[in-house]
Image (cartoon, rainbow, N blue to C red):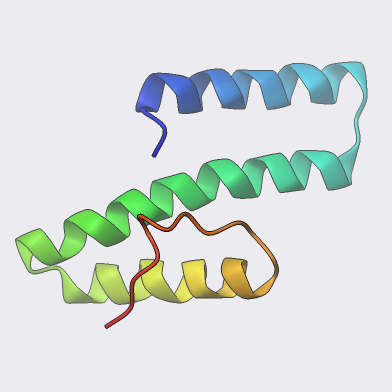
Length: 80
C-alpha cells in the first residue's frame, strides 16, 4: 500500500499529464488506481473501529473495480 505522500505525488502527476495531454482514458485509469488504494485502506481500518457500513461500502466498490480488471494486491484481497 502506498503511503499518503506517494498518493499526493501521484495525483499531482495525473494533473500535470492532463495539462500536457488531456487523455481522458489514461487519466481515469490513473485516478482509479489512486482511489483503489484509498478504498483499500479504509476497508482495512473500518472493522477495527466497528464501522461495518463503511467496510461494506468500500468492499463493494473495490469488488467492482477488481471485476473491471483493476489489479488486486494479495495483501488487500480478502472477503467476509
